[in-house]
Image (tube, rainbow, N blue to C red; front, side):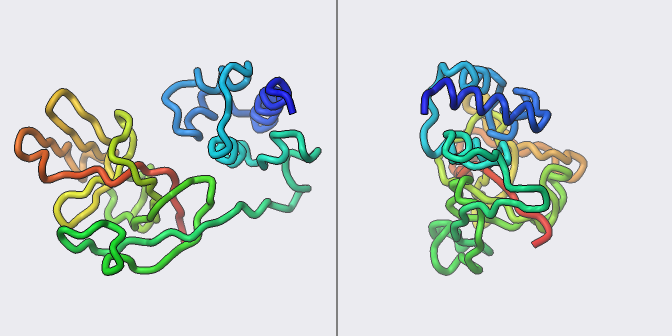
Length: 208
């Protein structure tokens, strides 16, 4: 299949769903629509891992985007079953242990493989509402750094908190969506040694 065919199918499916380039970019976690524009013009190559993620964002399958099947989605009344993987759901965290150490794991749960998540956390409280609510299970992709403003799992001592991560020079700010519940958390100087980025939030499950 040519890059042109792939690009046209991406655009076709986005328009079928009534999504703007900005909305699709948001689903993919991109900061602007420019990445989607380049994909639809065939300027950027799409790695296999990103193809699966893009297919999930477009409610279709990699096979359809690649032109291997004719239908972008199952017939009305049917939903595709995404490929799933099991990741550890982390409960309380023992001080000084890796976050996914055996003693920290409550159980294993199934999540979409396209998220490329490494572990999951249960959200407690309403500091990130309405984006993430109390009881939601948030899936995390392990990485030591995140982009400005992304939701990160940040370890502070024996706890992991989910907040928007911002860095300004030598100062780190963890910002909640609901500042009435949780004011900005600011770390500078020696305080930076108290925190550690565990990864980036890549998806969440509600009502399990």
